[in-house]
Amino acid sequence: MSGSERYKALKGMHDIMPPDIYLWQRTEGIAREIFSSYGFQEIRPPVVESTGIFTRSIGENTDIVEKEMYTFSDKAGRSISLRPEGTASVVRCYVENNLHTLPAPQKFSYAGPMFRYERPQSGRFRQFYQIGVEAFGSPHPETDAELLSMLRHFLGRLGLRSLHFQVNSIGCPACRPAYREALLGFFSDRIETLCPDCRRRYGQNPLRILDCKVERCVEMRKGAPAVTDYLCQDCRSHFERLCSLLELLGISHTVNPEMVRGLDYYTRTTFEVTSENLGAQNTVAAGGRYDRLVKEFGGPDTPAIGFAIGMERLIDLIKLSAEHRPPAPEVFIATIGEQAVTEGMLLAEKLRISGLWVETGDPVSSLKSQMRRADRLAAGYVLVLGEDEIRSGKIQWKRFADSTQGEIGLSGVCDFILNKA
Ligand code: ATP
Ligand code: MG
Image (cartoon, rainbow, N blue to C red; front, side, top):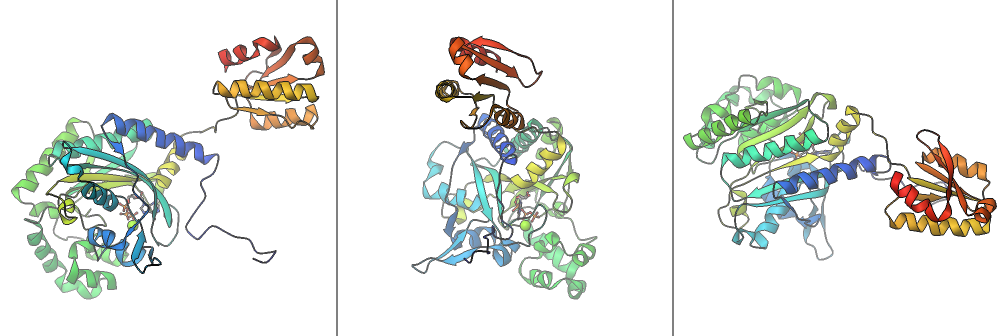
């Protein structure tokens, strides 16, 4: 690298830094707390997997597999991919480790970076983070409702209330063929007007046309048959029970028969949570049932359902919803003179062991410049230790919040701060 050249993060990838990092940590902590109260346990799959794991589950004709995967050959010539989503890895882990032998349902959560080679824009990155959950072993609509309720609970704890829940059922292998035929019939006289991708989708997987974002295709699919009119009896009663449970739980929602989602593995329930405050990329969380995927991965027939939350979009919403003050040091110790510097360091260590965030002044700076730094940091308490204080065994304190100040014996300062901070 020549002297004037500077490295930059890759396009579509970003650093998560203070002060935002505090919002991320808080959000992750709340997710952990709430998800575990519903019995979800964390697993941490690797971020790289065999490419087949994703192509097979997400589907060959999806945007993710066709355009967005980071796929490489490793040194042994194996095709490996950075994970574009979490479900495929969790299912692989579930099957590989025979987790179906444990009592059902088994419920897992995950959190971490995902990678998609997309056109970067607001709310759309090439490395982004998701928090997600997957529940294995329950075919019941009660599980779908519980998952949606947990999602609402989580979003509510973050102070986000004006979110829109959309639900749909995309049927099962028993009823989807009839719906597929109906779609083919509907689009047959307008294939030429669809985008090139959708023309291909027509032959391969016409349901994907409903997920296309090209304006022309959105226009052309107005009046298309609704999947909810083609559900078999079992899928219909599952969906009706889910909708009535959502009513009971007070989760207001709309049924959107166009919401087929961008991945092939879904069966029956699909859902999305959207916000009007996010602009074009307005989906903050999405998920659905995937009752056939475990079997496709070589496991026993195991129904399952999950969702993933887009962290960047969630953090944007949290930032819009309220003032967030980043945390500040609880104590700043300003010191003048070598002996005070030593005393200050010992005191700082004592307070840190008790759990406080303590900063100390630069040992060779003037008191004035140390005080300026304490002010900039918005430290809760400033303690001043100089030669006079060492001699008299007292320390000066000043409280940032109300500018009150006073003096306290050196031996009692720890208790004094711990009782107040
Ligand atoms: P979209 O329609 O926005 O492309 P998707 O259907 O591809 O979404 P999912 O695979 O369902 O998204 O992922 C779940 C959530 O992860 C999305 O609702 C969104 O919040 C987030 N997400 C997906 N792709 C990105 C991305 N490239 N950058 C940031 N967040 C993303
Ligand atoms: Mg996408």
